[in-house]
Length: 125
Image 1: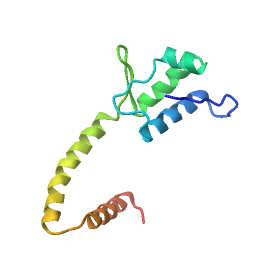
Image 2: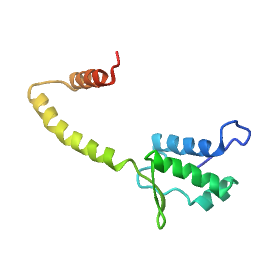
Image 3: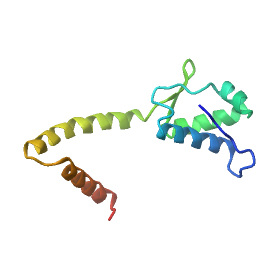
Image 4: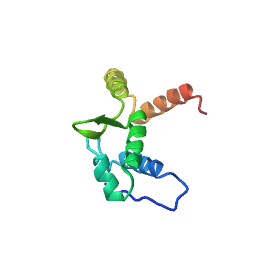
């Protein structure tokens, strides 16, 4: 993991670190289940205080991006409840999509339906 800290930035170092890890996850540069460097190793690598790295890791844990384990360290992990909800949704959608395919509903039509329902719940236009 390559981390670049701008020591001249008005943004706090722990926030810069947190943001770069989130971007790494979103860009699939850091994958689910992958371990991040230890607090000590990352602090030494970047040249910052260990407490700064610890603060960034703690925030990422609170936000549901990391699991912290004394033996395994910081591990990329999405919120387990969200993961379970996604699995349940996939199972339900599997049957609904099979029924739609039997009725000759196209993938594009399915996307339009899903987008419409999502906008309805999110109150988007």
